[in-house]
Amino acid sequence: MFPLNNTARRPLLCYVTDRRSLSESEPRQALETLLSKVEAAAASGVDWIQIREKDLSGRAYAWLTREALHRAAKHQASNGAPAHILVNDRLDVALSERAGGVHLGESSLPLAEARRFVGNRNEPEGFLIGVSCHSLEAARSAASAGADYLFFGPVFDTPSKAAFGAPQGLERLAEVCRAVSIPVLAIGGITLANASDCLAADASGIAAIRLFQDVQDISSVVESLRKLTR
Image (cartoon, rainbow, N blue to C red; front, side):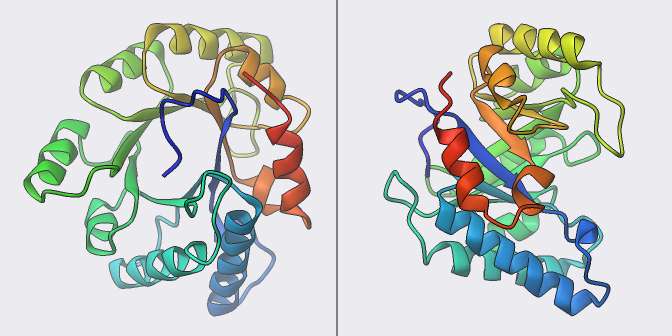
């Protein structure tokens, strides 16, 4: 797992999957293409990969997570460990497949319940519970309740959701980063052109779909991001 106490000050990079945005129309082909993207991301040195395919059945979600873990395990990141696989929303899948953590949204299982359930299962050290937040109040609440990290955004405009507006989004991001002591990853409309602005706002890293998934050469994207410092 990429350490959360990032002494090197290099940004955490998280690829968030979305097979529905791929061009393939046949479901099985879309899954295979997505897995090839996951493996390419792992091979390029992305720290975390969040499997975010909310419409899948539990069985299909478990299969996809299992395959992602298998493919990520083939490649070691720069810290000597494979990319950390996180499961969006489905704590049951994350635990049954022994993924690296779960990411909770606004309509997911409450953080306190997820933390209690993980504790009762005696999960190995390193299982992460992250939370998506869209306000300072939500960020403070999640940090107080024991979240390991936060996603905050959308910082910039995205096709599906309006952002705060770039200057205001960056200001709110900086405010959240100052208010909590856990890592905050910026999300929402992140590009190579604006990623440095997020890090300048003291984000610990960035999370994105299109930035990693919609490119032919993900390694060059990761290399460019690695040159940025916080």
